[in-house]
Image (cartoon, rainbow, N blue to C red; front, side, top):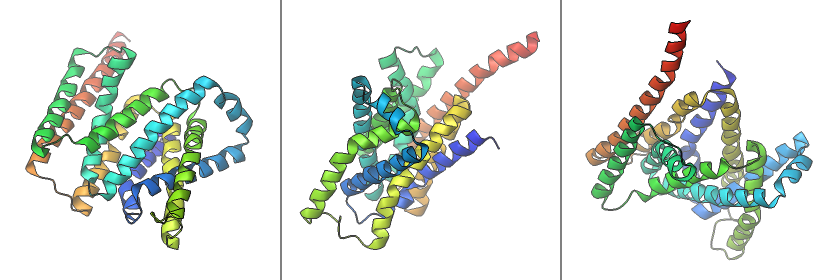
Length: 297
């Protein structure tokens, strides 16, 4: 199997099974999990940079004002995404978090139109419309917007948009992002411990190990994703990206027993149909030049 496929599949499978890991930390407040996730991610990534002896090159690129501004914005979006995801998982909304990542690819297309002035092919508006109908249907049946799903989709979509203008590679970029958040995260955890309002400082050894491990399980799939993106076609990455929300959805329904009513099935079906249409339209478009080339050859 292609190395890129292995890296990509590994990244998305890890993301897909994240709920199991964070459910083990259900006794810890979401803000403290976020703080530890940032803290230990930076320590892990800084160790990799040290082993690769790349601090000089990172400093040279990272200390430019434009770079600092871009990564400050992307780090804030990443922190919001991580916090909502952890809170959603540990509050019994795994199915809704999966919906956010089903919506995300379609939202990325829409963000490209709005911010990058990209033009959609006429048929690409169909899945956007179907997804919108799905969200509206779920909103009417919930009685409120599926805000967890939308917040995850928008925060990660905007994060990807900001990263399009980012000058650093995946390792250096993620190190800088977690480095920017390192001090605020450390201060929060110290305050939580000193005021005895959180669990920091009073965790059992297994929980403390899991909190430290959150840095590794956060960083590894992101690095694997970066390695995969350089090795395989974007279209294949597009197919693989549905592995994560599918795993999360199945975990929520089959393992953690979250309700999946008929109304939810209808709303999700709009989203799934939109994704199938989106994938099929793109695949057919890619095949046409190949078929034309084969015919002329």
